[in-house]
Image 1 (cartoon, rainbow, N blue to C red):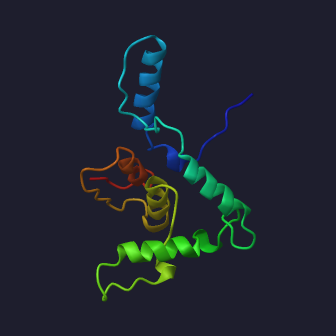
Image 2 (tube, rainbow, N blue to C red; image 1 turned 90 degrees about the vertical axis):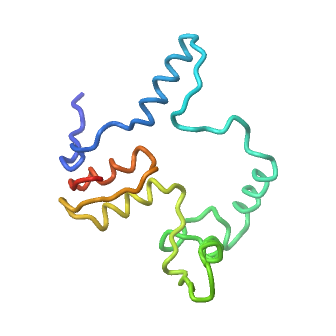
Length: 145
């Protein structure tokens, strides 16, 4: 079976450092080594019951439940909550159309970089940053600093 050819724009992207550290830690643990992993994090506890119940109720709520796709990538209630948290004063009115709610920052930043950066654009990433952020800039072919 032949391997799928990936787009050449992905050539500059290096493998995930986070996943490499996580895989190495798992391999060492499987070999019986006592390891504290600083790779990809997973909670060491189950989701609390009150959260599970709230999710069940939200999924079963007709018309307006959370089990359907949302228009334009956001749930209106979540956008309103984010507007309240982001507001610093009366002059900081934020239009709901300017709010995007997503599951993780990395994916949102990657989408942003792909939408706004052209090949060769310089990307400045303030430190400290998550180790995969420079890879997002690499995908656009510009210098990352």
